[in-house]
Amino acid sequence: AQSVTQLDSQVPVFEEAPVELRCNYSSSVSVYLFWYVQYPNQGLQLLLKYLSGSTLVESINGFEAEFNKSQTSFHLRKPSVHISDTAEYFCAVRAAGGTSYGKLTFGQGTILTVHP
Amino acid sequence: EAGVVQSPRYKIIEKKQPVAFWCNPISGHNTLYWYLQNLGQGPELLIRYENEEAVDDSQLPKDRFSAERLKGVDSTLKIQPAELGDSAVYLCASSLNHLGEQYFGPGTRLTVT
Image 1 (cartoon, rainbow over the protein chains, first blue to last red):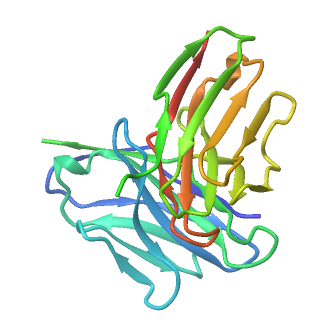
Image 2: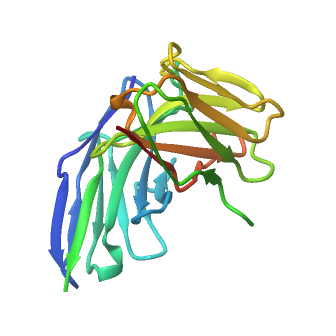
Image 3: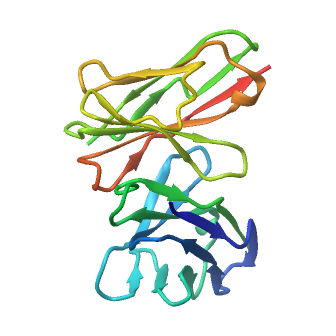
């Protein structure tokens, strides 16, 4: 089975400041990793994903995440946030094999609030 | 292209009453998921369909919850009878197949009083 821990339930930050949302996972098999974003009153949207290859992945709106296998982490970073980045962010893992193959497991979520 | 459609968006019912949620996935998506999202938590899978077949319903409380996807397209999730603890957001998602990217609907927020 897989589990995901998002270490911060809320992260307040000022506009144009850098931010890091932390995510650690546990799994007995190889995993694929995802970050989803949920804006108020909207469904979850895929922000970025790691399937294979380069351990650093980027989104179109300036977020990046780095897969660290030794630390079982997939932290999300942005060097300069905007007011519009205010949302809830979910880290998720999907088993690449085993009995849970294909199943998506989510963390508890981190609410990012960007202040002017 | 339309995304995943869910209705109703909000529902308030008294405990012991029945309730049903409807989901229309993205056209051509064979896999459909129902998730439960409690306040302050991430989504948890309730059931996954491959076409009309429920292939993973291990987390669905079968004493009061039921789901169907009769023609392999739309799906309905039902609770009968509802309990106070069922208050949550019920999310529907779909993907081309069980390994494809999942696209989520806006959810149905259920309040049981």
